Length: 296
Image 1: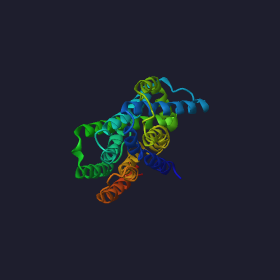
Image 2 (image 1 turned 90 degrees about the horizontal axis):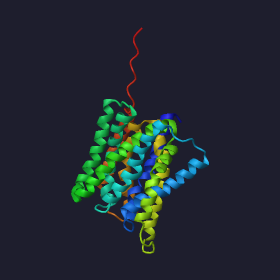
Image 3 (image 1 turned 90 degrees about the vertical axis):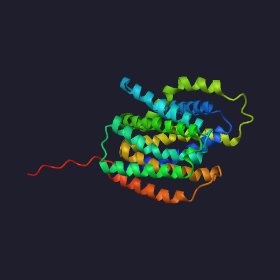
Image 4 (image 1 turned 60 degrees about the vertical axis):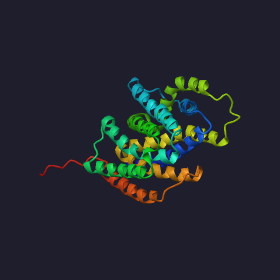
């Protein structure tokens, strides 16, 4: 398996793991405060990441990597989890998950700005068509149900795209699991006290479903998923592999219907077919066109 294909396979595994994030968050906020959820998931994952870094005796990041790691932490450790948790107090996960369809465009834009990638013009056409299909699907199913919830989700998409692109750039020399682990460790001095301060007075009234949601987003969404995702972005290209996120809303909707018994519209199947075609097209044109060789 070549490096690019390996990257796409790793990216798909990451997307499958992330697809459970919003349904799991929806379960968790039904019994836990969003601020506590954000701080607790980061704290749990950070302690696990610190254990991994210690066990494998990883060298500390260079000074030049500290600011990018802070950007990763602010984007994917703090920003996206907090904004989505707040949004899910106003909209259900089936509504919020369609916004994830905008993540590939956000990630690709930051991949160009921060990762130095230069996809071919056709890539942007397929990326825009795929994102447009997801947004059209959202509009058809009531995008404006909660302006506040929608604004929070849009903010989450922007900061997450930046965190993905910055993390992928760092993964090229630090490694995928090392990047997310160091970003989590950097956030620990803030998140640990915040988790303690915002903790519930008692966990007796917290349902098993809410605790299961917390466990999933702490272990899988906050750590394991990023191991595959950052590896995929680093090997296969930020802009190209990032298009796999177009599939995440539909995996998420299936999970929402199965776990939360939320209604799944039949139009989802048609839109999914369009999205898959756009992902395939975007993959083909995600790399810069080879330079023409001069005639001899």
